[in-house]
Length: 326
Image 1 (cartoon, rainbow, N blue to C red):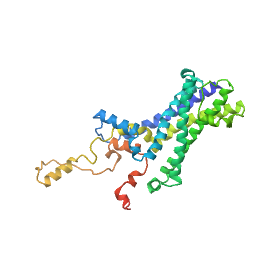
Image 2 (cartoon, one colour):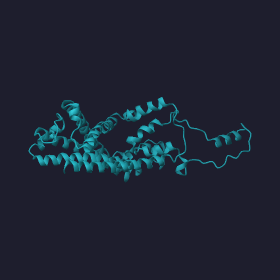
Image 3 (cartoon, rainbow, N blue to C red):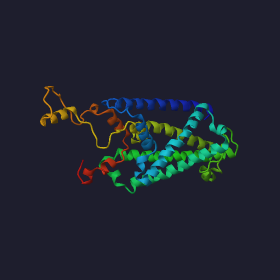
Image 4 (tube, rainbow, N blue to C red):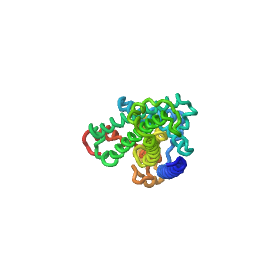
C-alpha cells in the first residue's frame, strides 16, 4: 500500500472513530444530566486534591499493596505508552515515519521508546497475572452472581486486547529496528530499542518485504486497536479510566456517614415530639429511595458509569458476609 493511500485510509479511520466516540460521549453526558441537581462545585482546592490523590495517584489501590502495584503498572502503561499515540497519529496524517526521532535525537528517542517497551512488558506480565487471578485461581468476588456473564467477559476481553496491543508494539519495533539497520527507505534511524531488541533475532533472516509487512501490520493493529478501544470503553466498565477523574473531583467532601435530612421527615419528627406547631402546609408526596432515573442525582448517575465492577461492594458488605442475599 502506498504512503498516500495509507494517509487517506488513516484519516478516514480516525474521522470515523472520532465521530463515533464523540457521539457516545455526548450520549453519556446527556444521561448523567438527567439526574437531580446536587451541589458539588464548592471547595475547589479540596476537590482537586482528592482527584490528584485518588484518581491520578491511585491512593486507594495501595490499600492492597501487591495488587495496587500491578494495577499501577497497567495504569502507568496506559497513560505513558499512549504518549506515543500522538506520534503515530501525526505519522498517519502526514505520511511520515517516527516523526519525533529527528527532533528529539536518536539517543533520547531510543531511550523513550525503550522506556515505553519496559512498560509494555510490564503490562503484558500484569495482564497475564490478572487473567490467572480471574480464571484459574478464581478469586471469590469475581465469581459472584452479579459478576458473571458480561462483567467477566468484559474484563477478560480488555486484558486480552491489552496484551495483543503491547505485543504489536514490540513486534513493530523489532521489525523496524532490522529495517533501520539495513537502511531501508522511509525507516528513520531512531536509536536502540532495548526490549524489542531481544526478539530482533526472530526477524533477522526475513526479507525486507516481509519485515515491512510485519512492521505495518503491527503499526495498523496498534492504532486501529486504540481507536476501537476508545469506542468500546464507552460501553465497558473500563470507562472508569476516564471518569475516575471527574468522579473523584465531584466526590462528597462531608465526613463519612453524614447525610442530609429530608425536610418533610424532619417536620413530621418535630411535630411528633412537640418541637413545632403544625403550619398547615402540606408537604405533598414524599419519595423515599429512587423509582425513576430522575430520582437520582447527576452524581449518582456518574457513579454508575464510573463503577469498576470489581465486586468489592458485595464482598465487603456486612449483610452479604452473613450469607444473606442482598
